Image (cartoon, rainbow, N blue to C red; front, side, top):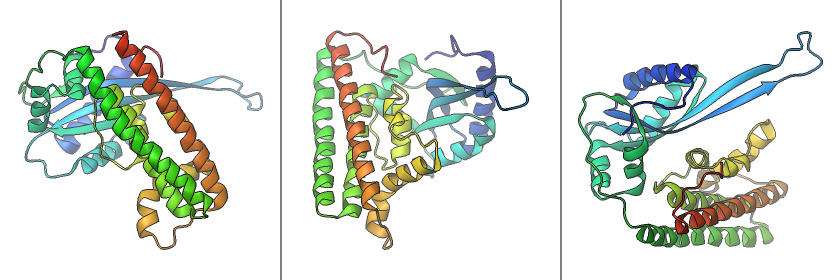
Length: 295
């Protein structure tokens, strides 16, 4: 593993120092490894304010793998929530994956693509006890990797397409709540499929916001389908994201026809983008070259 960031600006380096301190106090991890970051630069100017100066803002996002001790009793989602809540004052976002030390070492021993890549190319930003992780075996033959990626993709994306067809059938019969649930499942399985194809990470979450955040490590295109920059857009996304539970447990849950139709178009756009990303990944595998665009 690396221990330094080759290109990160000094301001973000200081932010990571503060980030590590907060994480160490809130969840007491064994190790923290950064496997990606994005820095969004926002500019704002208008001709109506008295001070006509352009204002710039910088908002980073850090992708972190937390290695947790065996005696940690909290499930992964509680650890993630604890970190996200504590780092809010730092004006940055974090996308967290948490694994126990034994699970991480087992995955490394088996050559798991996600954690092996993080081990080889990630940046160790916190190491409490200095206990070494197992060294993963040499990377598998590219043909074997490609074959497994294709098999995983076909299985998971086929499910996404099946749920999409079910949603259209439900909408055609006026069953908008059930159809929205099926749209959620379609989006979830499509996100899981592309996440596994690119990174090797196998997610089990139903939270679309988290899935899109994990995908943002290698592409921002799926996230742009649900921009959530206005109240209306946020409400639209929440209708889809909460459908997994609301459609089954909330007796007052309703989805207007107009909302259902918009969500159908958005999910179809999401599936199209994810299909294209997968095709780009296949091309890169066949040429044995990494994807350098697709953000």
